[in-house]
Image (cartoon, rainbow over all chains, first blue to last red):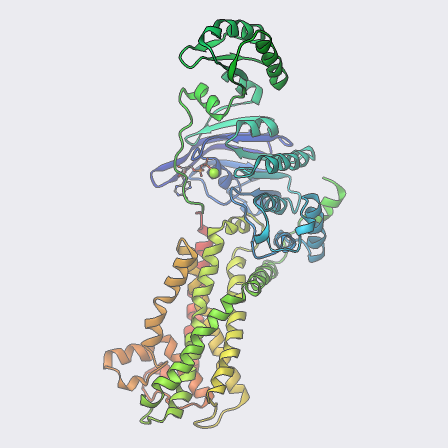
Length: 321
Length: 285
Ligand SMILES: Nc1ncnc2c1ncn2[C@@H]1O[C@H](COP(=O)(O)OP(=O)(O)O)[C@@H](O)[C@H]1O
Ligand SMILES: [Mg+2]
């Protein structure tokens, strides 16, 4: 049985640009799929095709058991969309925005009102509820946009780069909200440019490049292909390289690479920050002076490098429409 | 899903006509709230027509020949129907800008992902513009009265006829907002919508009987002016207001201005509403 979100061979071209070049997806009910890819990879176009905003040139899409191309309006009843750019009316208050969306989901006025209040509280916007959204911070707008996508508690949700442009604190906050949401059984397709985000939120990750899914798997599987976490050390004196290398060998889960001219040593590890502290203590204990040390987690670039042999190239993104 | 959220789930599809009406009202309310929070837009919208009333009355007043008379009072009474008609068509620009703004900010994507009636986003916007046009007309009529405009200056009229004239003006304005809606969806920015909403309006409103007596125009121009939809409404208003300077031309719209005005407005409404809604549906972006 196909999952809550299913796509087969989606193709979409804009003039010469082949934005989607045969995208296949299958997201089981109640799980989160992270669509990971650089700018211009086709994430937004995929989301727009699945949410009835764009008609693919060919291919098949089924959302919540409904054929997207044949019954777009029925699909709209079962989905919530939080697009790449917060789609809230900035002259309306947070409350008015949510009530309007509720009414347009065909809720009765009283139900829409009650639901707006519920969401404002849940999303920590109750204090700002009666201020125009224009006065909201970026994080608040994002939360309001997300709340608007949740007005009818749709069984299937789409979020297009929900945390892009947010500061770390707001990002963390939003992650918590999203986690809470999916713990309630919602199926979610989330796009992101950050491996860390997909790692944090998604059960499964699909890596897209040039309109195709080039790899899929859990974040552990993807990370395994990139070599996972590494500790990077830059020693102060060239003479210390050998000693430092020996220290790292004790902690590492693989071969240490050494760049002589930059005095940089890199070793794959598992154990995160705790391990890093131990490495520092050990180096210190042996009197090895270091210029820099850090824990490096694999990024989208690393994943790309290992999957494609080249770093993720950015394509200039089309002006938002 | 919890019991609470189940109870809140969307209602089954209502009658499409009722749903369309309800959704349009929700969107109209949203746009009216917006307008009330940007009052300077309404005020700017008023300044230009008021300036026209004052300038035309006092600057051109004594030098214009209307139906053989150069009386400033006759020109004033002639002029107002033209300015009213021009003013209602300026709503084209604001509706175009509003819709372009929604497209631009991605709000249309939200609307298009909701299970709402397809035409409601545009209908709601044009209805809100209609309310604003009505307000503008009221203010303008008061200013016109203050500078000395009087209905029945050239014959008999009654309340019904005067209200009928305002009805025709609102209908014309409403039809033109759909031209604006189509423009708003065809351009990339609200600024472009404003200027392309206005640029063609100037020739259309000036090559008409709005400000001058068409009998002084060169024949080919006069022909255009007399068949201009805009002239039909101005002429109809002059007839209904019983104001001077009504065209004596044989052209059908000048002989039957009320019908002509109704037919023109209905046609514009029908054509541009169809085109705009179709464009909205296809606005793949
Ligand atoms: N409306 C459009 N017109 C023309 N090209 C577009 C349009 N939308 C997207 N594209 C192109 O399609 C490709 C994929 O874009 P998009 O799906 O927005 O990528 P992403 O969301 O992953 O950054 C890009 O090359 C982009 O320039
Ligand atoms: Mg995108």
